[in-house]
Length: 89
Image (cartoon, rainbow, N blue to C red):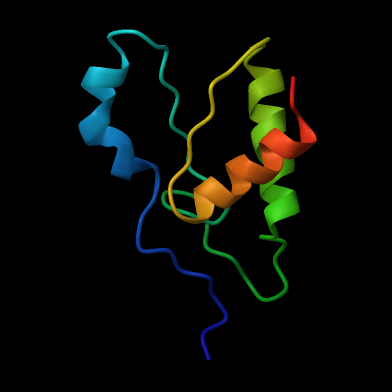
Protein backbone atom coordinates (compact mmCIF):
# COMPACT_ATOMS: atom_id res chain seq x y z
CA UNK A 1 0.00 0.00 0.00
CA UNK A 2 1.31 3.42 -0.94
CA UNK A 3 2.19 5.80 1.84
CA UNK A 4 1.19 8.75 -0.34
CA UNK A 5 -2.23 10.20 -1.00
CA UNK A 6 -2.59 10.80 -4.68
CA UNK A 7 -5.17 12.81 -6.55
CA UNK A 8 -6.09 12.52 -10.20
CA UNK A 9 -6.62 16.27 -10.45
CA UNK A 10 -5.55 19.56 -8.92
CA UNK A 11 -6.24 23.27 -9.24
CA UNK A 12 -5.32 23.18 -12.95
CA UNK A 13 -8.68 21.48 -13.61
CA UNK A 14 -10.16 24.98 -13.48
CA UNK A 15 -7.91 26.50 -16.17
CA UNK A 16 -10.49 26.04 -18.95
CA UNK A 17 -13.05 28.02 -16.96
CA UNK A 18 -10.81 30.95 -15.98
CA UNK A 19 -11.53 33.15 -19.00
CA UNK A 20 -15.30 32.89 -18.60
CA UNK A 21 -15.23 33.30 -14.83
CA UNK A 22 -12.86 36.27 -14.80
CA UNK A 23 -15.27 38.33 -16.90
CA UNK A 24 -17.40 38.89 -13.80
CA UNK A 25 -15.35 37.58 -10.86
CA UNK A 26 -11.90 37.67 -9.33
CA UNK A 27 -10.71 34.08 -9.63
CA UNK A 28 -8.21 32.46 -7.29
CA UNK A 29 -7.32 28.81 -7.72
CA UNK A 30 -5.01 27.24 -5.18
CA UNK A 31 -3.38 23.89 -4.74
CA UNK A 32 -4.65 22.01 -1.72
CA UNK A 33 -2.27 20.55 0.81
CA UNK A 34 -0.33 17.58 -0.65
CA UNK A 35 -1.47 18.25 -4.23
CA UNK A 36 0.68 19.35 -7.15
CA UNK A 37 2.92 21.34 -7.03
CA UNK A 38 3.11 20.96 -3.24
CA UNK A 39 4.98 18.15 -1.52
CA UNK A 40 3.25 14.78 -1.40
CA UNK A 41 1.91 13.48 1.88
CA UNK A 42 4.09 11.29 4.03
CA UNK A 43 2.85 8.68 6.45
CA UNK A 44 0.52 10.14 9.09
CA UNK A 45 0.29 13.50 7.30
CA UNK A 46 -2.78 15.54 8.23
CA UNK A 47 -4.85 15.72 5.05
CA UNK A 48 -8.20 15.61 6.81
CA UNK A 49 -11.15 17.62 5.57
CA UNK A 50 -10.92 19.76 8.71
CA UNK A 51 -7.23 20.55 8.09
CA UNK A 52 -8.07 21.55 4.51
CA UNK A 53 -11.01 23.68 5.68
CA UNK A 54 -8.61 25.49 8.01
CA UNK A 55 -6.17 25.97 5.12
CA UNK A 56 -8.90 27.51 2.98
CA UNK A 57 -10.01 29.81 5.81
CA UNK A 58 -6.41 30.95 6.29
CA UNK A 59 -5.96 31.66 2.57
CA UNK A 60 -9.10 33.80 2.58
CA UNK A 61 -7.93 35.64 5.72
CA UNK A 62 -4.43 36.15 4.32
CA UNK A 63 -5.85 37.65 1.14
CA UNK A 64 -8.04 39.98 3.19
CA UNK A 65 -11.23 38.85 1.47
CA UNK A 66 -14.33 39.95 3.37
CA UNK A 67 -16.77 38.00 1.23
CA UNK A 68 -16.22 35.14 -1.19
CA UNK A 69 -18.01 32.76 -3.50
CA UNK A 70 -16.19 29.47 -3.03
CA UNK A 71 -16.36 26.62 -5.54
CA UNK A 72 -14.81 23.18 -5.37
CA UNK A 73 -14.66 20.03 -7.45
CA UNK A 74 -14.56 16.43 -6.23
CA UNK A 75 -12.82 16.26 -2.82
CA UNK A 76 -12.43 20.03 -3.02
CA UNK A 77 -16.23 20.30 -3.06
CA UNK A 78 -16.30 18.44 0.25
CA UNK A 79 -13.80 20.93 1.65
CA UNK A 80 -15.95 23.82 0.38
CA UNK A 81 -19.12 22.31 1.88
CA UNK A 82 -17.57 21.98 5.33
CA UNK A 83 -15.98 25.42 4.98
CA UNK A 84 -19.39 26.96 4.22
CA UNK A 85 -20.98 25.17 7.19
CA UNK A 86 -18.25 26.42 9.53
CA UNK A 87 -17.95 29.91 8.01
CA UNK A 88 -21.43 30.97 6.84
CA UNK A 89 -20.35 34.60 6.72
